Length: 331
Image (cartoon, rainbow, N blue to C red):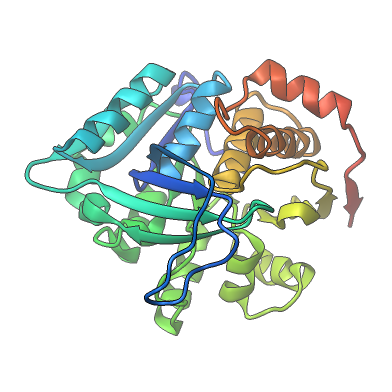
């Protein structure tokens, strides 16, 4: 990541995660999606705190990285559960607002036996995160070294202009910025792409998955999408390619890193936990190649576990050592 710190703010540490919070209802073992009026049967279900901000923050907390969350929940049992889960994990929830009379969001995730998944979401009050609420939480944002904005399309009232201003302000304060937009439910209209490309000028670390990178750039291959994104983003770009690993652009080099061969229980939240592994490693000032190994190891452990999914830093380090491979670097 590009580092904009100066001597006056070197005391900052950790990550501030800004984005969507919701509950996930996950049903595993679903053989295929049902047709309208039909039903399919899975073999187990879980209900747990989620949203891109939730997955990322819980992953960072498990890795021992100082983390705070800025977002909104409803004043309902689900909102209370999310806040309690963050606190129990060791994340700071001072920036989470409980909105009176509002409903916390819910995502239903149907997971195939091979771990692939499909989602249906009610974003609930996540869409109520506004520029004003973000300003109210600025005392939380300002004390961290890195600010991660995630789930941009699930916090729709924030808007691209406000998000752009927010990231620019963070960089002017000397903070590093990370962006993981998630998928656009509106299927990436041109107005969105123009606004996103402008926003990327204020991003030090951009972490799309391959589908998102292809949609944003119009390019069919990971290599061409990476080249297009590196033209508009001044920082590091990492494209997450699932079982194919990742491809990155960092300081003039293309880096390729394989995924760790893993039997996946499900991949719900895997990209966000990859993000957590990478951010935690960079927070510890690991070189980018080592940080990517830790990101892949973090995601590998997470997807292989049905419960207690978030790995610790020691578990990730051991897993990364046991599956060490060289990252290919090309000028």
